Image 1: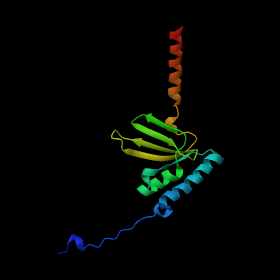
Image 2 (image 1 turned 180 degrees about the vertical axis):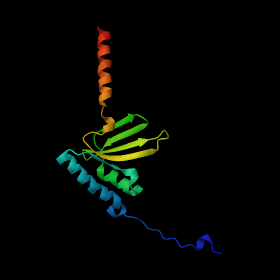
Image 3 (image 1 turned 60 degrees about the horizontal axis):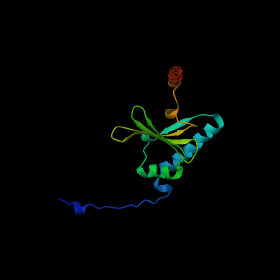
Image 4 (image 1 turned 90 degrees about the vertical axis):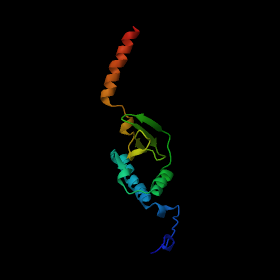
Length: 139
């Protein structure tokens, strides 16, 4: 019977370059295509990061190379969400959390403004009525 010490172990150290995050580099190239489509055709798109076989290294690579932009928003609708503009204008990192602050969904959205932070037309109509009622109260 063999012992645990009889099992050969090989340690591989990954370098911090693109080779350590092959999916991250491919996603940057896809984002370039999607951003071009936004600029040239006005076509919005998104990438569901949770549906892809990304390693923590791939996600770190993306965060490093996309950077952080000027806009951050927190949304409380059906659970907490964060919207972070990346340093690449038009590319947004959107994360949806559960009640335990675990990421449940994660997207890179290529758009002028993510839908989650746009006011819904029905909400705007309701707010118009609310504002009118407040104005009446002031008279």
